[in-house]
Image 1 (spheres, rainbow, N blue to C red):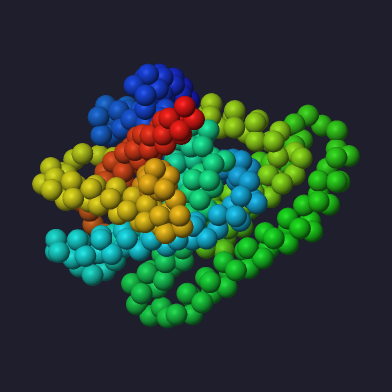
Image 2: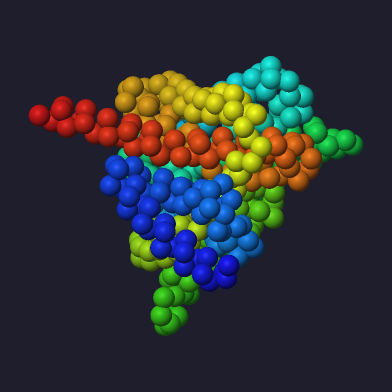
Length: 388
């Protein structure tokens, strides 16, 4: 099928399914995820992954993370740094322990078990942010903690990935681990220096430019530039995009950039990204692993929820707020899929295990927005009762 026809089909069907999801009181992103499953190899097989779809979906997730940064209140993030750290650490420790022990019990080797536990320690902030935005919950106390925790989660998982890969690669010592830690520190120092010293100069000079959509172009350029820098240093590119957004959130052009990029992303890039997640699924040969799919799916939801819930409770959140934080951390999404793809490429996991993990990642990714919306609605109902 022609690439242009595929994109046209994705956009039309996605909006229809998003409408149906909203009618069923589900987050619209659930509709987008099911489009990928419906049109992809799992069901109809009319749409396949391609370089074009991969590129568009990559841009989509970068823009989602950039928007998350622009919409974030940096002072609020600093205010809730302590609970964010607690939620992030427990949100990694719980899945790693649960999945490592469970994988070993079901006969996987220590190498595979370690990698499986790492995959499920990741959190997808992009999908959670989409749901929080729909519910106007990004700027709340819970939303600020979730954004901070998911960001720290990604950073720690990237560092752990390099540590694990070093442990699993013969002849590689701790030198690479030290190098990664150093480059991570240098990245954040560089971001701070750019925001503090260079960005004001750039914006002042940019005011003299008189061309249409100059601020939109600047926002996109910074998002892609810092994504590139982060990726070059061995970090996830979406971390770079997030911090580019954080920098612009503190400028007067931030709000203008946010609105315009949000429109572009919602209409085009984000739907392709969410559909691309479903395109990774194939049911072929998975029947014999039905029991593992169920167990891993339960663990995927439970481990992150419990980690986030306990982390929030440690820092004084009530049960309803802690439930929102826990549900927000469940989704694995693109980060887990990147890790599992790397595991297959490096022959750490088999093709059958790859398919199993992809399915479980998608189950948790679909379950997360449903549970998150329910948790938010429960909290809102409680607040309404208190006002009466």
